[in-house]
Image (cartoon, rainbow, N blue to C red; front, side, top):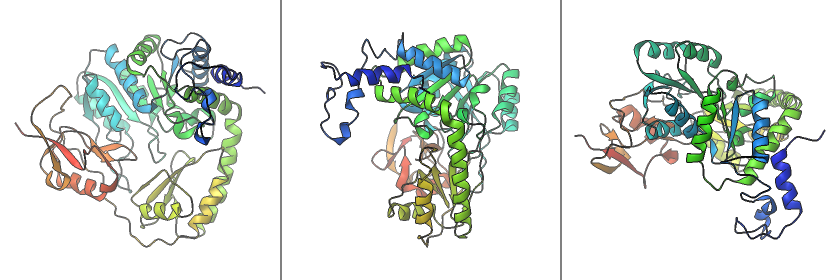
Length: 449
């Protein structure tokens, strides 16, 4: 069966003709090196390829097919990653309502905090609770309900589901609660775009939320930066289109756009079959690993997000050792290693199990709980004043001038405007080799008035 891929087809047809090019990008389709093997399909806005910001034919058709696949009012393509998609989502709600507060769980990506500031919104933080790996749990219904009962002027609730560990929030229950109160729900589903293509996976959040962010390149066969924004509601959809015009680059990556179109069609056609195959391969992998007794597999809601528990030993050490065998993981955190599984690459599991069986770990994991909120004042980008840069070790008791945390997963441990506690400092120091938010290893500090 031929896949229905109008944008992909248009771009590949253009490349096949080997046209004489006098347009961007500067390589003009010439294969200068192996790196440029896809150069023929790397094009710009042309009559045949449509305009992402004002789509009229093949991009519009591709987005319509994505909308139909996900069951939304409208779906927008993005080539600058889920970060830009978050800005579009938050900006859409900000333009729709005069309310200025957003309930936000502290497992949110750093882009959510920046987006709130950009559009003049203020967060109300859910309670921060750590799991047995020292990381923030997904948002819980009763925490959101408490804030809805105690805070006025709530514009939206912003939750992350699934998270980096493959855990989901109770999105349907949260949506029901939020909508009963006349409040919008944004779901950062960056790690869950594949949920839509197999009944073996959790329900996709687009069934329940007003706006959902999908970082398709994370878990689908999509080139880096490919993302989607799913919107429910005609007026919200029009506002989202307007926000994309204002926020997205005028030079979108057409290889990425084509891959979004192709991946959607491919996974609609074979998603059920390939995820069934992946699940079977994973069962064999789990049997091999758990028989070894050195490792165990953490349970979660997404079996394609493999979380290997080193049982007290260092996940970071395991990641380093795996690289010696040519195996590269997505992330380590405490005693865990996180691997993103592709249903189109199931053979990699055997390579991973063979490597694991050859490795002996020696370092104990350093388990440190995610620090509790110490929020004093939300400091937006309009606030100016005295700032200075200090070494991390000198920052206890100081007001932080930007979000700081570890990447991946990109979740701030300290938010701009928070006073840095000993617990925060301890957490950041323990992960000092992978911090974001520093400037040449220095922390931006807002001096007290």
